[in-house]
Amino acid sequence: MEIKNLVVFGLDARGTIYANFAKTYPEKFRLVAIIENNPERL
Image 1 (cartoon, rainbow, N blue to C red):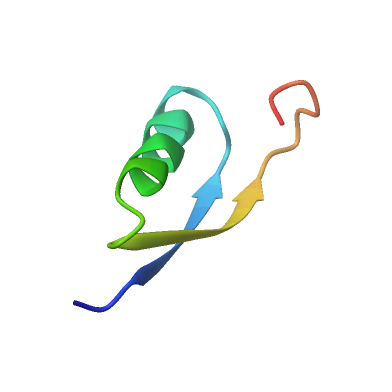
Image 2 (cartoon, rainbow, N blue to C red):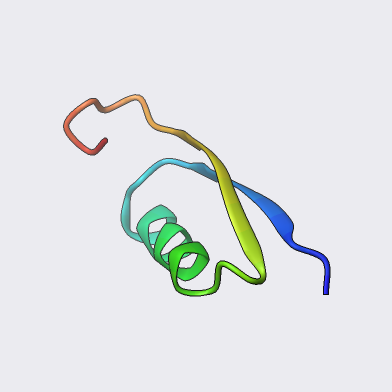
């Protein structure tokens, strides 16, 4: 199975869910970037 690159735009509720999903399934997804304009969320 091919590993998909994942870019998360914003770490609000949905972005956090996607980032955690990538962390849980590293054999499926590689988190390559997080774009967030609120420094407190990073």
